[in-house]
Image (tube, rainbow, N blue to C red; front, side):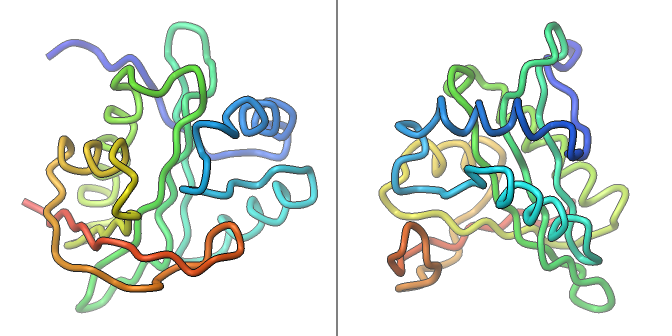
Length: 168
């Protein structure tokens, strides 16, 4: 297997300038699909939220130049009998469509299953988001259902498809 083109690390406050620049450069890419933190206050609030128990966030960075490829979040991590988490992700321009987020998503899922010992990771994706649906499929996620008006994004309640990946 070839070495990974990416690496993961948790976000830090010092990442704010690069992160916010990447968000600004990716507005067209994100469109109505995702609303990442777009200013310093929102970035610090997101960072604080991701430091809470049951949450983990990872920056996906290119190994060759440390450029910010995207973000993968594990949220609402539940242990015990359920051993599950929700997965959210988004790429940054100009790295979309290069397979780098697939590597990042697979690395976070390996962490979820091997380190956190989760049984299930669930991603909820808007039905019209063809790129995100294709990424989930490529990473082995299976469609489990449909949730009308599931999540409020951009001020509107949006339908989502439920996709899951199980350990093993």
